[in-house]
Image 1: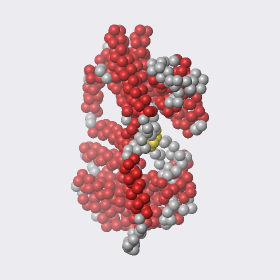
Image 2: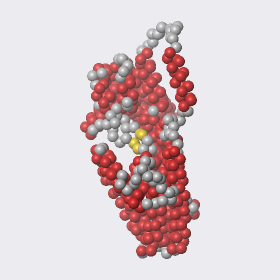
Image 3: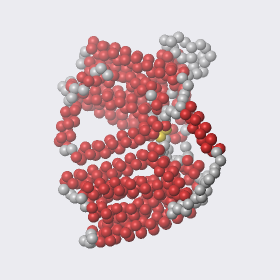
Image 4: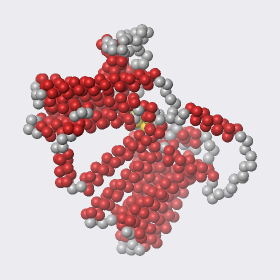
Length: 573
């Protein structure tokens, strides 16, 4: 490559050649263009990210300029507290997201530069500069522009604030990559990737549910007073010796014409940035020189397991008892046991379970809100919908959750009916466990155990009825479940808009088919005969079994004719 002699000796440790840095930046640009030229999905994803993220950051920058200029100089304490909070959030986001498997900057791929004789300063400079070509960096730059325009009032203050923000950007990238490099041995393990996926889902659902609980249960005046007290709290006294606090102190010092104080904070920022980059470089050098481990299990333990498995396979089989006749066929039990193990091990299923718990939280929040307002407890009758949607999700997206493992499952000559019976048995067990817990909670909240008994019977019928249409959806409209991977999430669902619309329509049909079960509860109450509800409740079981039998028969008949299409859809990358 022009500008870097690949065959020459490595330069001295502290060499920084501008020509080499320019060449590396040109290399990053070419790799970026070629990456987009070879993948249409990357172009679409980049456009969507640009359209969504950059205008949002632009509006935030405009709001920062307007807000800081309206507060300065009269309310300096409030303005600097807002600055400290903003910088703290920005640092936390940049430090945490790479640990949760999200790649913020694609320009930080060290593997593309290991073949060239580069010094450590050249390597660090090229990695830092190459991040300027990433779209998330544009959002950070826009936020920094808003901070600079909001606080600067003349040319000297603008220069000092710009220097502080440049060092802040070096801090952001350096600290996030230092943590990522230091923990890479842990991050590469499957257990951590699964845990990170669950934590991401749990964090998002907790924030959503917490914000709704905060807005509904805490009076507006108390919330406003708490926010005002938080904004006036002198958080700078705690943050000033950390990187975000140093940046905030430097910005405030230059904005208030304290150039000497600002220079001291800039020196502290530069020194800490050097230490961060040095530590990052040392860890990168050590990781490149160390062999990569194949996993968290020691090689000796893996060899012992392999040897034991080989001995077990080679051992002669003697004294095998004949298979006993059981009420449930053996393939059905084996498939149900397999799915139950998957529910425990696969993080994708844990995301589905967390989504169901989120729905439970919303229903309970509505119940508590209405109870506080004296409206009543009718909302508690809908608490069984959480288990209903969980079972419908597990059956309708069963092949999508299976993913590439479906190709192995297809090798076994299992009857289609047995396949769906086994999968439905596992989903039904999980749904019934959740339904039992929800009904127990509902009984303690309402003290209406008669209604709890009615909901137990009708809810069981609704779960059975939902699995029939779910099986038909899984066969007729298969969809791939997006899976998390190291470096980012797969956003391609594997289907188009038309398929997604058909799945929504199929979900609507499934809900309509289970509506008569709800009618068995509501109609007696509407006609003034609630005593008939318990007498009519067994009809829900009969109706649910009928709907399940029809949907499962349709799915079993179409499974093998559509198996190739199902595998193509759910295993598509």
